[in-house]
Length: 168
Image 1: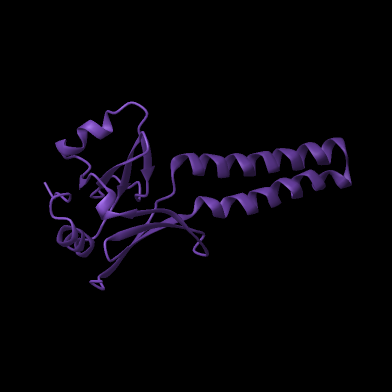
Image 2: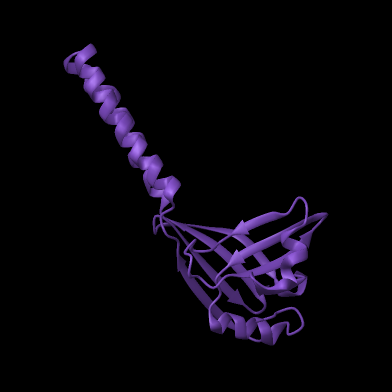
């Protein structure tokens, strides 16, 4: 074992669709309160409370961060929800991948345009992010992992698999 270790933490921005969902939850709660008060009377706030509680439990799931952990030629992609719950989403061994290159590289074109491509996006969704892609095949499915590795992770991956990792 080489004993190589590196981790990169990426904070995903709040997506527009999540902002819209939050706004809709609060609008529905307000509408339920007004309608309940006018139609039912003093107990009309009960539907509003239920909707607000649903919103309170759903809203934190929109706060997602990613952590990439490189250990001895293996990369783990973890999703961290609300800063508390961690789940390993994918584990890849560099020996089993076909290539790793910048997402804008022509080397990944055959994967990006493949029919039935399964895309795993573990990026921050920010427009100025430097994105890389890992292309691998699992069974008969072609997969593309989109992520933002740090310089140290790129150096370790290049050292492990120099013919599979490209920086162009």
